[in-house]
Length: 319
Image 1 (cartoon, helix red, strand yellow):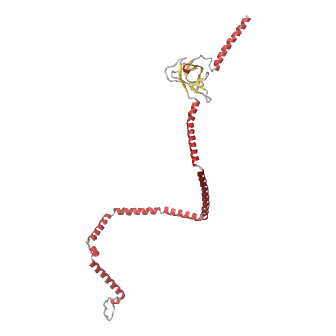
Image 2 (cartoon, rainbow, N blue to C red):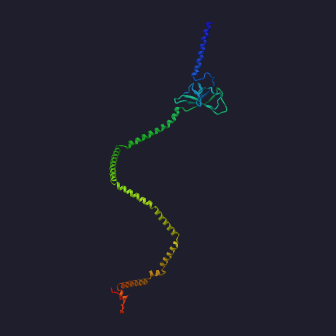
Image 3 (cartoon, rainbow, N blue to C red):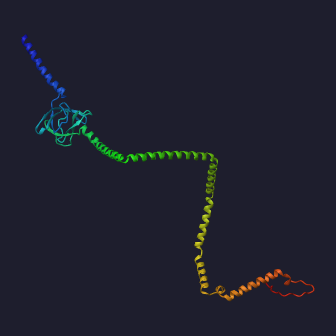
């Protein structure tokens, strides 16, 4: 009896070790040893680093693990997904391989569909793959790489042009131009010193000029009211002229000028009749002589005589 008990104990310990080893391996794989397996399957053309024991998540929450992977026909991989959180999954759900962190750890994201039909344990779900971190980085860096290559090509062409332009003669000319610019700046500096000296010496005059300008502007500003009054008066005059019978006046002037030009009227006779003009000229000449004689000999025309002296007749002086 004692011998059998020892064999029994040895066998029991051996079986227990095997059980612990199996469950330990499952535990190390991330499998829940206290729940029944509910395997689903997904076929991938490339698992991109997915391993047995990788998490299966739904919206970031762990709902299972990848329990096994097999290589099947056409070099595709069959992954066994042990999902224990659901009794049924919509048939259009997708198991997408994703990056779980920046280190490139892979996992499976379960994206629930909206179908009214559901799968059963052991069915094959739809598969998908998210772009890898390297692909995302390449997508961002590739445009920068292309632009950098274009920039390098442009800089290389620019350097070639600069090297061709800046030959020995051009460098000498450029050096001379820089020297000329230095001289120009030196002259400008001296000129500014002189200008500053002139301004300093005539500071009072400049201040007085500015004061006078301010006074002039003030007077002009004060005179704006008078200018407005003058403009209003001019406007009133122009309005009066526009409202007056100026057209009738112009017509009368035109009639008078027409009569003069056609030879009718006394004014026309005076202008055109030579005898009338000569007689008028002769009369005015005699009148002028008479006035002149009156000034020289007033006694000849105005006489006061008690004894009644005789009057002298007018005789024209001989020239």
